[in-house]
Amino acid sequence: MLVGDVMHKDVDTCLTSDSLCEAARIMWNRDCGFVPVVETRGSQRVIGVLTDRDALIAAYTRGKRLEELRVGDVMARNPKTCSPTDSVAAAEAKMTGAQVRRLPVVDSGGQLLGVLSLADIAHEFARERGAGKKGVSAAELSDLLAGVCAPHSPLVAASA
View (cartoon, one colour):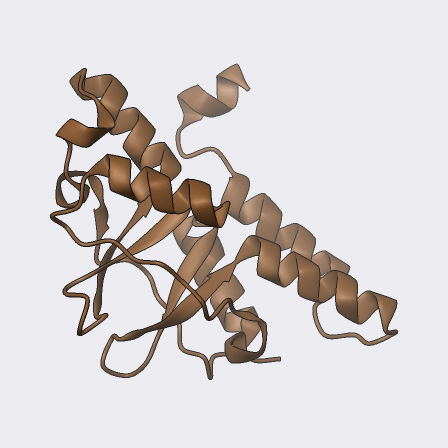
């Protein structure tokens, strides 16, 4: 199974100059916790990603409101990405290795084509299981969730 068969293709984006308030509005309207950051609206070349957690932690630690902070000051730069022709298994390995729940899907020039999320993979698993197919295995899905959700530091693991 390929990433292009499973990914979401209709994705909203942010610019580095947008406020975190604008990014939060996109996340609220799209019912998601992730927005790719692109170089320009015209190019759609992915230069970063922003999560709801990034925005919240930045506002809290800096003591500022979302409208006072810019996406470019908070986003993760040089994000892991995948191609629509990558296997879902290869994308899962990238997600696990980077401990991320979503990957921008880009073409060879870095242009945004969509987003692949854990939810997309889980929905595909459920669809295939219901149809009696064996694309994504339960073990594969379990390993992906365990890898992505593992604590980043020993202090977090000890308090969990």
